[in-house]
Length: 283
Image (cartoon, rainbow, N blue to C red; front, side):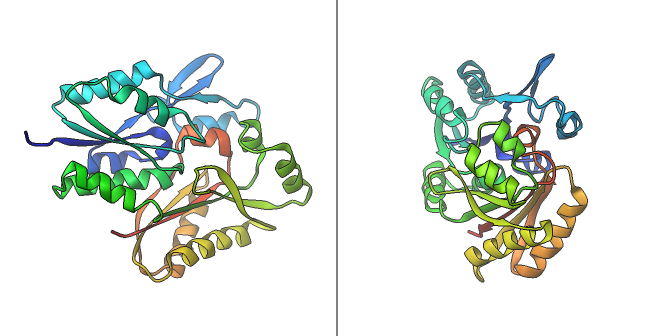
């Protein structure tokens, strides 16, 4: 039987609508919860809503339920897909990947490969783009899965954060790290380690130096290899555009494939002023 492959990603992978449409990527929404209403990330809530509610009101998030995931996968099967590649953020940052893994085997007629990226935001989403590109090129399902395992060390994402307040309120960092950064007026650079856990790459005084350090760290990891580049921002498009120019100058062999505002679910835990830079070593 001929394979019909679909790529899906949870909304915390930050795959924007343009990329969804270009590569036929389906997005499983995370929930954004306010006291008066619950929203679906990327469906009926705009990130602007999150920033406008800060700092007086900070919503919470929750992962899709097993029932929602089952419905999502069954709909893909009903559309005629025989194979699915599910790209998900780190299991240390969300239980979504575990829920997908638990449910996937229940959908008869749909073979699902669940990929734990051990990362977040477009550090995860870039794997969905990579997989979807291979699907479009006609690469068989098993070969795509094999290649994705081989690319695990090739995605490099770092965030400059203007404040740790929101990570602290979301329970993502401890009291000691938060207090030290605040007392010393340090701006943190955050990434995920190989296990998919947040760690601090560096603490820098001054926003400009912090963003330059992010780019320098990314450039160090990429070297002179060709790569895909992406820049994400947290409610600061102008600073995001300046960062694009900085990274183009620093990594001239890179191809910018994505520039966007981070999704609402990620804005909840990061607050305003964030800048993210990604480099993915080109296949």
